[in-house]
Length: 110
Image (tube, rainbow, N blue to C red; front, side, top):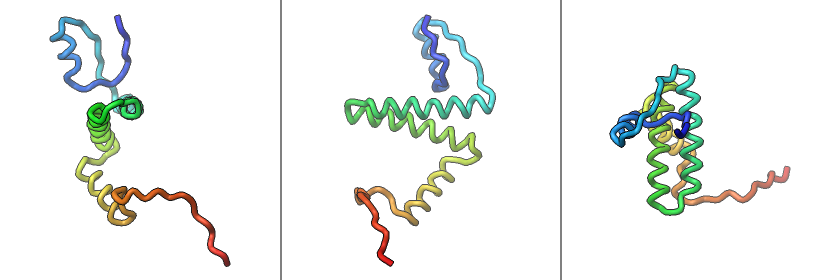
């Protein structure tokens, strides 16, 4: 028996059963769910950093996006509202398209 104790995608238990295995699950309460999503974001981010190919990295980014969508929901927002917030910040502060790398800032002489 392998113990996981982690949040999984909705269809994973069915996939396990279809593979002839038995799994035990439970439904998290709202606070547990928020904590589990936060842990899942860390897990998926670690997997992204450990990806060895572009395709693996893209797969992990897709997982990260799915977790972010769920986190937006539990924090009282939605994907469109989060996207609007992102676009507003990009409009005000820019995005990351120009590849600007800030090295240092010197205080102006008075």
